[in-house]
Amino acid sequence: MTAVDDRPLADLQTFGYDQQLERKVGTFASFAVGFSFVSILTTVFQLFGLGYGFGGTAFFWTWPAVFAGQLLVALCFSELAARYPISGAIYQWSRRLGGAVVGWFAGWTMIIAQIVTLAAAAIALQVVLPVVWTGFQVIGTDPALDSVSGASNAVLLGVVLLAVTTVLNAASIRITAIASSVGVVCELVGVALVVVLLFGHAERGPAVLLHATNLDSTTGYFVPLLMSSLMAAYVLVGFDSAGELSEETHNPRRTAPRTILRAVAASGLGGALLIVAALMAAPSLTDGKLATEGLPYVLTSRLGTVPGKLLLLDVAVAVFVCTLAIQTSASRMIFSMARDRVLPFSAQLAKVSGRTGTPVVPTIVSGVLAAALLAVNIGNPALFLALTSVCIMLMYLAYLMVTVPMLVQRLRGRLATGELDETGRPLFSMGRWGTLVNAVAVLYGLGMAINLGWPRAEVFDPEGGHWYLQFLGPIALGVTALLGLIAYAAQRRDYHATIGSPQPRRWLGGSAVAAEEA
Image 1 (spheres, rainbow, N blue to C red):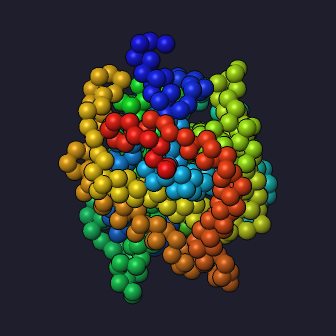
Image 2 (image 1 turned 90 degrees about the vertical axis):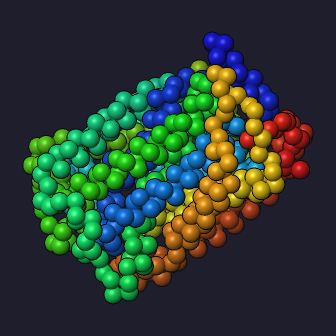
Image 3 (image 1 turned 30 degrees about the vertical axis):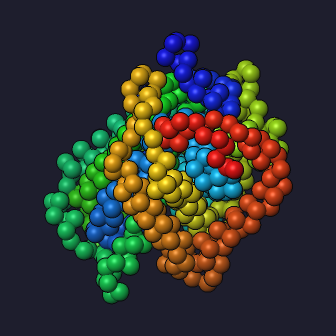
C-alpha cells in the first residue's frame, strides 16, 4: 500500500468497518463498471424497437430529456460518493441520510432490481448471437424471444453467461476489473464504428429528427412520447456502480464521483449518436421493421452480412461486460447489507474469501437467483419482459430513497465544506447549485417512477388478455414492500443492534455527528 491509499483504510474505519475487500480497482476500471452497467451497445440494441414503436422518429428527443434528468441524479450521487466511499452505495447513502428504515428499504429494493436486471442483461445474448451464427440457436429454429424455441434458447445462453460471470466475479476483483476494462474498450470502439459506418450509409439527413414519422398522434404527442421515453429510462441506469466498488477503488473519494459522471456522459453521448445514426441509415422508416427488429436489422441490412455480424459480436462482448458489472454491483449490495446483519443468513453473506478477497457467497446467490428468474421466460416471455420493465421502476424508487432524504438534509442546513480527498483537494461539490439540482432530480425521479409503473396495456400487455401483466407495476411494488416488511421484521433487532450505537458519521464533508439513525 502506498501512502495515498492509507486514507481510504482510515476512512472505512471511521464508518465502523474494517478493510475486507481488496483495493485493486483503478480509475479506468471504476469508469468501466459504471459504463458497462449502462452498456448502451447492449441496451440500445435490445430496446431500440421499443422506443421507435411508440414514438417513431420523434422518440430521439426522449433520450436527451431522460439523460438530463439522470445527469442531475448522478451529480447528487457524485457528492455522496465523495463523502461515503462505502460498498453498497445506495443502501449506505440512504441509511445515513434518511435513517435505518429508509436505508434498509432502499437496499432491499435495489437488490431485487439488480437481480432482475441481471437476468434481463443475460438474456440479451439471444438478440445477437443467433443472428451472428445459427449454431447458437441450440434449441429449435426460431430465434425470436417471443417464440417457444427462442425463449428456451435465450434461457440456455443466459444461464451459461451467468455461470461465467459468477466464476469471474468470485475469482478476483482484479480479474473482474481487467475484463470490464477490456470489454468497455471494445464497446467504445464498437459504438464509434457503428456510428461512423451508419453515417456513411445514411439514407436521409439529420432533419429526420424533426419529423414525426410513425408517431401515432391520435391522442396527442405527449402520451406516446411518455411511453417512448421508457426506452431511455431502461438504459440510463446503473451509473452508481462506481460507488458500489468504493471499498475496492484506489482514492475513492476522488475517483468515484468523477467516474460516475463520466459513465453517464459517455453513455448519453454514445446513445444519442447511435439513435441518430440508425434513424438516418435505416432502409425504411415505415415498413415496421425498426419497431420489431431494431438495430440488428439496420446493421445487417446497411453494412452487409459479414461486417454487420462482426459488429454484432462486439455487441455480444458488451452484453458480457454488462452482465459482469451488474452482478458485481448486486453482490456488493448484498455483502454491504449482510455486514450490518440486515439480511437473512447474514453471517454467510457477509464473509469475504481470504483467498480471492471477494464476497463469494453473495456472488453465487445473485447468479443463482438471476438464473432461476430466467426460467419465467420459457413459459411466459411476456411476463419476463414485464418483470424486467418493472425492475427499472424499482431502481428509480431506490434512487429516490437517496435523493429525497439528501434534499431534506440540505434544507436543514447540514451541508458543510472543508474536507479534502486523498490527494489533498476539495471533495466534489455542486456548491450553491446543489439545492436546485437536488430538488429537480427529486421531481424528475418521482415523475419517471410513476411513468415506469403506470399500468399501460400497450407496454405491459401488448397482446392483451392478461390483466395481471398490465398492473404488474403496482403488484410488484406491493409484493416487494410486503416481502421487505417481513424480512425487515425478522432482522430488525440484529440490524439496530449493529448500526444503532453512536459512530462518527459525516454528511457532505461536515464534522462528525452521532448515529443519524437515532
